[in-house]
Image (cartoon, rainbow, N blue to C red):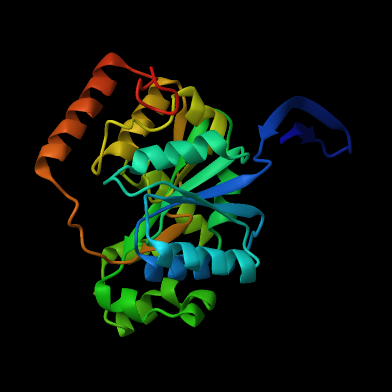
Length: 297
């Protein structure tokens, strides 16, 4: 959607001088891409957060890397009963193939703007609206997340999420979450958020837990590199988007996901080294296209 907007000067005598007309490019249809693999309990807590969004004009696109029937049954139940718009993309479990299922979603969705996250991340109620408000042509958004400990991850209820308690520092501390300076990301004062987005030294990188951009821009770089496994695959996509000429905007203090804790048995040093070599080559060559993405060479 494109919206024409005018910039004008209003004088004391009542006259108005039109300075310029510019075009604001906004999404027509937002898709929220959620990766998941065999963790329906955490995925359901995420669904509670999506049901509490202030802006309900979006479709959940579940990128399922081969989960079993328990996940399918959960999704079908929410498709039937929740009022959420949900589409389920699945392929057979053949090991870590997250990039492949993400590319399937990008290739097949009719949503023109995509927010990316994981099935262990509970969104703040304003998340869809914030991404919509900040979306700009030829750019992507980089937002934040807050890591919960296992105790809080287990005890948080639908009522806690719906009422917004999960995003309140005092409530978190009372439930056993250690006090941290990172709780500053939970402050809701708009002026503070804008200031911190500007001051933060953190680069506005593409983060798989909370980033968004246009579907056409993802297709223009051929989506995710399917040579990559866990560790850096999101950043490599962002580096190709930068090489393509997109700008990134920092909104890490404007909206946030609460990251539910889990084991990380899939971290492997040899894969990290391989992925890092791919990223270094992407940066060195200023590559905008992967040969092993949506379209295969």
